[in-house]
Amino acid sequence: MRKIIIYLLLLFTVSCGTTKKVSTLKTNLPVLSDEAKRDFKFNLYEGLRLKEERQYNEAYEHFVKCNEIDSLDAGIFYEIALTQLAQGLKTEAITNMEQAVKLEPDNWWFNTYLINLYVQEKKIDEATVLAENLLKKYPDKEKSYQLLIPLYKQANKINQTIALYDKLERISGINERIVFDKVYLYLSDNKPKKAFQEIDKLIVKYPHNYNYKILKGDIFLNQNKAQEALDVFLSIQKEDPQNPYVLISLSDYYKTINDKDKSLEYIILALRNEQLDMEMKFDILKDHMKDIIQNDGKIEETEDLIKLLVEQYPLEEEVHGYYAAFLLFMKREDEAVKAYESMLTINPKNPQTWMDYLMVYFADKNYEEAIKIADKAIEACEDNLTFYFYKGIMYDMSNEYQEAINTFNLAIELFEANNKTELQSTIYAQLGDIYMKTDEDENAFRAYENAININPNNIIALNNYAYYLSIKNIDLDKAERMSAKTIEKEPRNSTYLDTYAWIFYQKGNYSLAKFYIERAIDNLKQEEGSGVLYEHYGDILWMSGNNDQKAVDSWQKAYDSGVQTEELKNKIDNKGWQRQ
Image 1 (tube, rainbow, N blue to C red):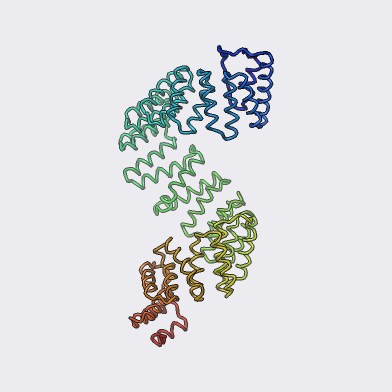
Image 2 (cartoon, rainbow, N blue to C red):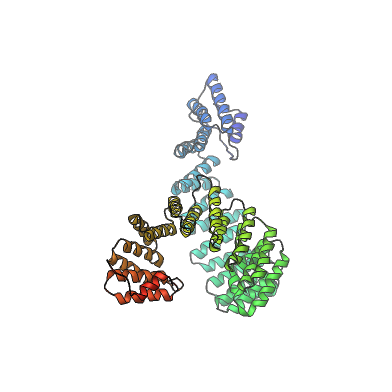
């Protein structure tokens, strides 16, 4: 059947919003009656209209009717495939796209679409065959190479990929993208000489672009040819003394030969260089900040440098952040606070800045001021409930338990009904701890239950809940199950081991209690409080009845470490208690 021009235009331009399509006229056309032609046109136009309106199922039905009228129309198979893709029927779409390609094997768009579908389905061999055929048909078309090269790369066909690049280069000329890809391929194939030859092409073509020479030097450095790298860098420095990128490469060179001072010197020179863009300077600071501020010989120079960057970029949060980090390192907290205030002037809704600002006072145990900052952060970052958490923690540490409870309950009310998050679980766990301090056992246990229901892996809640149950000597089986989970997660945590041991003690299983309390003491870290553990150890030894003096010695250790309760003093003075 002969297609009128408007049909071709509609079929291969209008019908797909962003994808071009080109169809060739068929020579083996069926002979259709006038009525069949009218039906074909009607269903075609309806299908195209419905597809544009994203009514894909209805469009599909019209295209199927077209296919029933003319089963040799490749464009109709293509349209059927597109509507199937829009409905998530990828397997069926591939089958119809394959039919379109079979009917019009030279059609560029049908082939490229099918190649992309094959790639999505990881059918790399099938995609490669199609792409190779396209290249044979369109050897002067750059996109033919761009289709096949990634497939060869994925198959690790390095030599074939380079050969394609060579041919593409003859069409498009020498350009950076092709050269860089070839350099990477040669280096991955352990052919550095070939890689250098490729870079030399760019150097010859663009003699005043020193970045290509710097790249050559960097490759020398990565190939452990430090002297060759240095020669390249020094020659660039001679030709272009203000080039900031060669300073960075020189820093890498001196780092390679373990001259840290010289390496740092070049980094600082690069940061001072006005030609280096702001983003690059910040990347350098991020990578080298620790080395810079820990070099005692360059403290003053470092501060001058960061101050200079603050002056150059006064509205950039990041540079103020680096200055704040430097000031905190120097233990100049008051000045760091001013840096954070500058950042908040620039961007008052940055939660990380608010948190860093708050932590200065938190670390100094100035909870009153930290709470004020938390209130401001809550006002500025309404959706961030983390600040409620820290505010509640600070009330807790200030022994203002009711304020802490009120803060945590307010935070919980602000969580969305179905938004069960780790933070919410943590808040419930903190509530449980505070309720235990205020002797509200029922509220505490309810809070712990909520914490664990939201996050069954909240091991802090599991441990504290289990411990308080054991202290109250109730529901010990449940306590044992919860405590066992914490030991499974962290088998060397002395706090969790102590809880587990104490549960067994309360259950009268003194042999297991002794085993786990000794594991807890073995894993005790220097910074951890040991008093409670040694008191428990003494109690367990006493009830085991096989080493009374060792029990008294353990109680004494607990007393000396700060657990100076009347109960403990009586155990020491009376050398234990009457066993039943």
